[in-house]
Length: 151
Image (cartoon, rainbow, N blue to C red):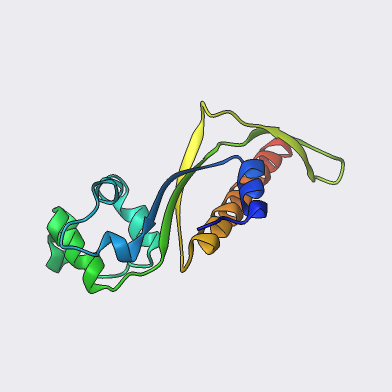
């Protein structure tokens, strides 16, 4: 599978690092979860379930997903298909704004990073969702900093 060069360029320009990619049908293709998916679910259960649009599902009959086998049954029973991506990006800070309040630049370092999960039907859609999510994060951080500077 080839990834569109424009998307790769946008990932680079946005400062996005792809940490994990899970093709959910393959994750549940046998009775045991992939170790890396289980680690992600165990570490970031709320975020993973939110991204998969399963946050409102009752997990009590699956022992609250405390075991790998229960988590595998839950994911399989909910017929999750698509691509889940965990990505990281630097935490934007020290924004500079023009006289109209528009962002001119900001600083970012991998010493301070944040991780997020996005989910979509295809890899390309998931990568685009990560780029959009990252842009929204930068905009939100810029608004916060602008508001703080102008109070």
